[in-house]
Amino acid sequence: MRICHLHLLWSDEDYHLAAAINILHGKIPYRDFWYDKPPLCAAYYLLIGGYPGWMLRCLDAGYVVLACWLAYRVARIWWGEREGYCAALLLASFTTFYLPAAVIPFAPDALLIAPQLAAILFASQKRAGWAGFFCGMGLLVNVKAAFVLVVCAIWLSPELPLLLAGAAVPLAGFAAWLWISGAAAGFYEQVWRWGLLYAQGSPVAHPFELGLGRVSAWLGFHCALILGAGFGFAYLRLRERWKLGSWMALSFAAVCLGNHFAPRYFLQLLPALAIVAARGISRAHERWRGPTWAVLALLLAAPFVRFGFRYASLAADDIRRQQPKWTDVAMDLDSQQAALKIRQLALAGDTLFVWGYRPDIYVYTRMTSGGLFWDSQPLTGVPADRHLSSTTTVFGGPAERNREELIRTNPTFVVDGLGPLNPALRPENYAEIRQWLARYEEVGRTKLCVIYRLIPRKRL
Image (tube, rainbow, N blue to C red; front, side):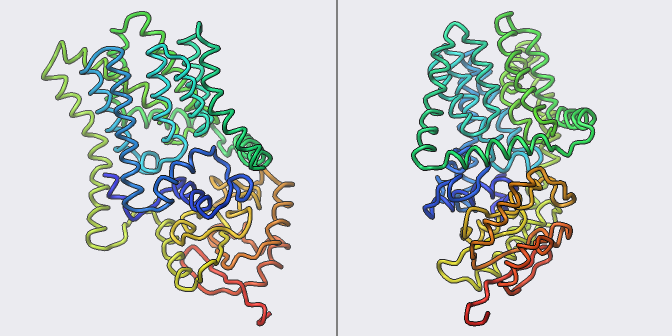
């Protein structure tokens, strides 16, 4: 099913692919280019050289297989072989058949699945050092791994020092790298300061209503998990109940963090539910063998029908060499057109700056930015999740200083991928950017982009 997305990039995976391309060009994240995510997100895409296409989709499928194997191991340790296979089946199904923007791209929420399961696996075996190590690795993927660390601390309270020591190993190694590379200040500014301002400036007006709606929608598509987990929880022994209950409760708390309730956030809850649901399905199988599998097949059919046929439609469009008609991939298709125009004009060594949040253009051109900044978020102070319709800044003072730094660079190409969508945030609306942009000439357009190229000095 992931191969159906061969010719598309989804939001967030393109950002980390572009970061990997920067690293392959010798740039250090946080110091040489702005990167507001933990480091292992970019490192994951280094495994395929930052390329989209076949290698990307096979890498992601391989990651799902790894996560399913870990789920199998966890459930088998707790109960047995049948529960292990069932947990793997459930995890494979629900990392495939849900909203593509949530389950296809491997961004921090999806990349945390394997470290979380590895930490829980070793915590189940009472191997506190290794459980802590994978919690630490998880923190280098997603800060929400802190909730996994708390779960392991509850389970392994007598061995808490060893657990924390294990977590400190990867974190200390990363801290040493930040210090040696000179990227520590940038890491604080980009990951922590920007991240906290982003969370505090959340555009969610009614978080309770939003959360209730999105939780209900998620539970509806995942009713096989909910019914299985509910049935399984009733049959758990007391020790199992408080341990697995704490894992599910803290995972749900992580979903609620920030009041956004984005569909991809629920991936943190998915492993815990899959493990407990596997036990419930196994117990149901012992009592009602035939009906259990019939009901399970029916419940799994709903997300399969809802999303599987769309994947088939996407594959058919690929075979016919037609562009998909999905509205949620319109921006990616536009970025492909913009990248094609740039590649037709570019020379070796040319650089690029994109005004807006369009990292897929960097991926499709294989180009890097000419300086620290490669999108407009730190320059306008308006985060990407709201800059298509809002001008409310969360980063005003630093953004002004960042614009002063941008105009000291000379990227070969500049793409305005935001102005056509939100004229209030056109680059020309900022005096210093307007003067800087005067050194460029328009060389192409798409429906959602304006492409500029640096005017040679002899023509200025």
